[in-house]
Structure formats: structure tokens, C-alpha cells
Image 1: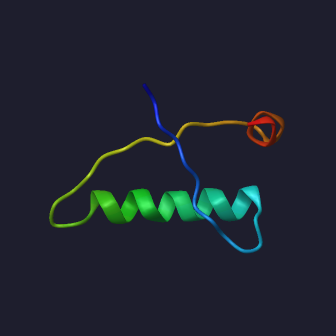
Image 2: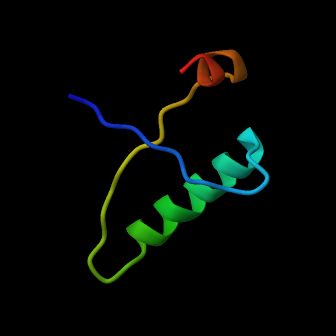
Image 3: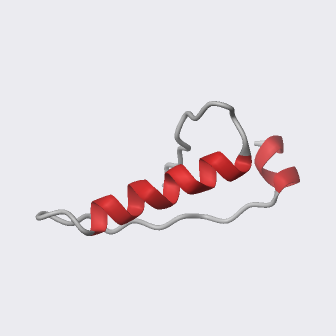
Length: 50
């Protein structure tokens, strides 16, 4: 089973969501107790359809 999420940003834009996701991943990987996750890719139409 795969769980996905996206961060809440204002304004709610795909560019803002992408930047926030990248920041969360980078922070998680560089912490003292790192966590490694992945970011799925979806185009505008696929993302809004979900």
C-alpha cells in the first residue's frame, strides 16, 4: 500500500506544493536521524484529477 500527501501551502499552487515537498525531503534527509522518502511525479491534469 502506498500513502501519499502534499503539504498545505498558500496560495495552493503546484509550484508551491513542489517547493514545500522538496524542502521537507531535504530537511528529513539531512537531520541527525535521517528519513529517506520519495516524491512521486504527476502532471497538472493527473494531480488535479486526484
